[in-house]
Image 1 (cartoon, helix red, strand yellow):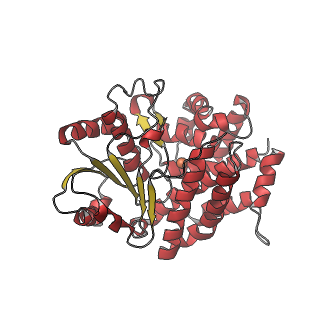
Image 2 (tube, protein in one colour):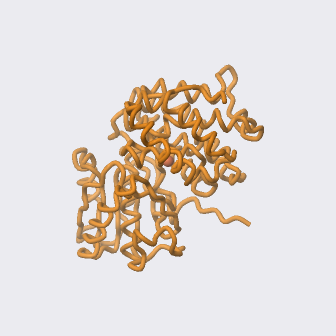
Image 3 (tube, helix red, strand yellow):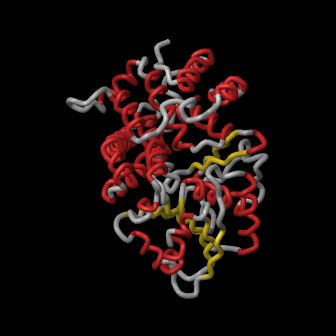
Length: 379
Ligand SMILES: [Fe+2]
C-alpha cells in the first residue's frame, strides 16, 4: 500500500492565478519573502493589493540564498509577536522553505532545531492557512512536504520532512517567473530537471510518479533553453509548471545521490542548490547508468535523432552557460582537497541513501573527483 500526496488543498495555475488571493477572508497575513526582488519588482505590493479590505499584513523580508537557522528563528519571533492566521510565502525556494520551518516551530513549540531530526513530526497542518507562491522554477517547495535549513555552525544543510509543512495552496502565476534573471532561471531549472530525472530512475517510483517525472523531464529539456536564453514567456510558464510536476513526483518517490552530493557542497560553500545540481547531475547519471534498470529508464527518454539523454544533459548545462565542474565554478582546488573527507562523509548521507545504485564510499570519492575536475565517469 502506498499513499500519495500531490498538493495540499489546491494548486492554482494559469494567467492571473494570483487573483485567488481575493478569495481569502480578511485576517492577519504574515508575508515572508527573500532578499528584496519581490519588493523591487512590485510583486509584494500587488499581492497586498489583492488581499481583501481589512486584512492586516506583516512583512518579513530578508531570507538569504540558503535559509539559516538564525533567519528562521527571527521569523518565529516575529510570528509570535504578530499572531497570523495566514502565512503567505512568496519568492524563491529559500523564502518558502524558511516559512515552512517557521510555521512548524511556531505551531509546535515542543519542536526545536536540536530535536527536529529525531522527534516525531506532526502529520497534519495546524490551523494557519499556508499559501506558497514561487517566483523561481526549481525547488517545487510549493507542493512538497520538505524544507531544507542550513546550520551554519555545522556547514551542513538539514532537510525537514513532514505533512504539516506542505502548503495548503500553491499558486503558479506565470507572471512571477518572468521576474527571474536568466542565471537564476538556468540554475533553478536544472534543480527541477534533477528532481525529475532522479525521481524517474528511483526505485521508489510508481505509475503515477513515473508519469509525472517523465513529463517533467521532457518538458524541462524542451523548454528550459528558451526560458533562460530568450526569457520567452510561454517557456517560462511551461518550466514553472513542469518544475511543480517534478516536485509532486519526487516528494512521493524520492531523489538520489545528486541531491545528497549537492547538499554537501551547498552547505559547505554556500553555493546555490540549483548550481550544485547542474554540475553534479550528468556525472551521477553516468555512474547510475551502469545499472541495467536505470539504463533502461534513461532509454525511455530517448528522442529520435537526438543524442543520448546523458549527453543531452551535459550539452544543456553548457548551453545555459553553467559550469560543468566545481573547479569551473571557481571552487579552489586547495579548499576541495582540504575539505575532501568532510564532503565525502556528507555526500554519503541524505538522498544518497536512496540512490537506485548503492555507491560504496570508495566510488563516491572517485565520483567527487570527476565532478570537481570535470572528468568523465569511467572507473
Ligand atoms: Fe533540489
